Image (cartoon, rainbow, N blue to C red; front, side, top):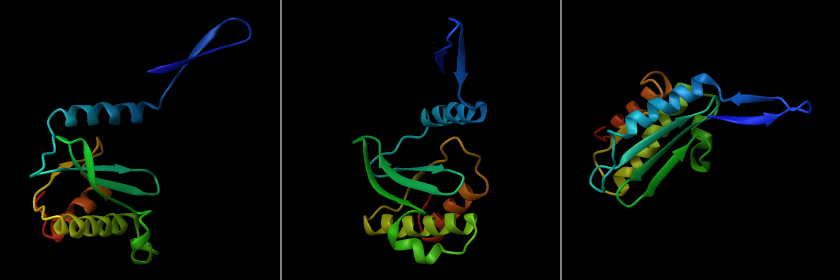
Length: 135
């Protein structure tokens, strides 16, 4: 949980990660116990940083990432320039939905990654639904 660091005088302190981050990781572990991707219905894993959002479609039985998209994806940079973070997330959802359709997948399991189903995470899911994917 923490990293031990020693001082010159022989004492030591414990450096802990941010409590919010640790709580999110804990929630994500709880969610992952229930959400499992299969070849018929892969899992969409979502991660968001302060600036970007990332999503990947994963087949957990094979342990492989089938498709991934993010705000850093080269072919979408022109579409998302000048938009809000929520609008960018929706565009990523639409792009991911099109890529999934090309692989003949119509149903996905949504893994929110310990984040609230709110804001950018919700927008990404709405983008997937808008492109005709059952989430």
